[in-house]
Length: 208
Image (cartoon, rainbow, N blue to C red; front, side, top):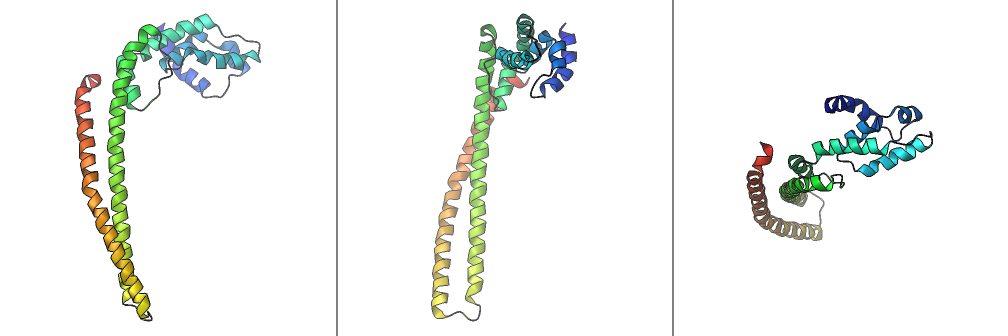
């Protein structure tokens, strides 16, 4: 039965790609298989309410018992500790689809995956901060060069040159301040990377 259900999943995936079920789909629906697919994807049992609304217009009522039976079978594939970790590590959301006796191992893995995801995001955020600061350095340096080149151009009066010199000095001060921020950001990145690597080692059993 399980093998047969898995073989039907591609066709059902195409069916659920639509916003609604049409009359033909409602009349021919295998509710146990649909439940199995939803359970395997981590969708809650309440998903059947959508099908009930779709099919009500066509005089069809979903077979709730068959759907629930299939959903339970699909959930047994989805609600594992390893899969919980994978979902959390991808930053995925949990829709409360696991039955009480299946939820604990899934949520244990899910929390571990969320922790690793959060640490990964911290590394990415630290890198972004450094990239942004380095871009600011490059922009400021180009502006200083541009204003320095203006100083030697003909047609400038004394006051204009004085103004340019003041602006250049101000930019140089700003540039020094920006450079001073870089070591702390680099330290933050190293700390974030170290925390992520340590967590990866702790969660290595999930990858085996």
